[in-house]
Image (cartoon, rainbow, N blue to C red; front, side, top):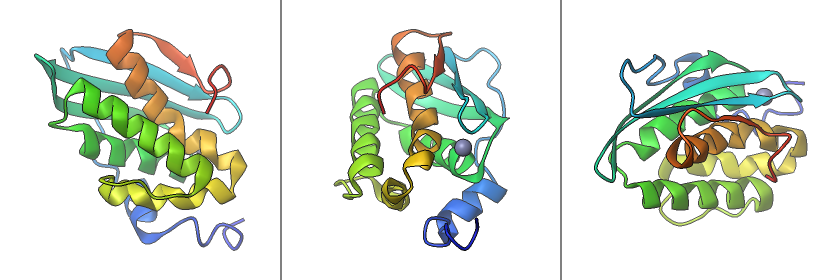
Length: 151
Ligand code: ZN
């Protein structure tokens, strides 16, 4: 399995998988959402603290495969300081990358997930945290399952 995925498990992904950033709950978070990917067993809960229209803090807890954890870790770094609309646009870019393999402008380190498109079974792992983000922004407290969602 690791041989097949050696391209995919790039250094950044491994690093964030082993040492996830912002890996904790946020007491008193403005909103949160739970994400579940039954195909792989990934489970995570995302927390956001929003002030006005801007995401001040983001964190997550949960368990799952390397891709899902690294994706959630990079998500929390990426959305801090962004507005709701910017976060939503970043979701669209990540979805575009993991389904087409085309790196989008302004995504920074998230570009590592462009390689996921070659592994269709892993797309839901990579996008799970992003579905949770959108759910938290639109419907705080929602539980999302990637099976219900069009990736
Ligand atoms: Zn997974």
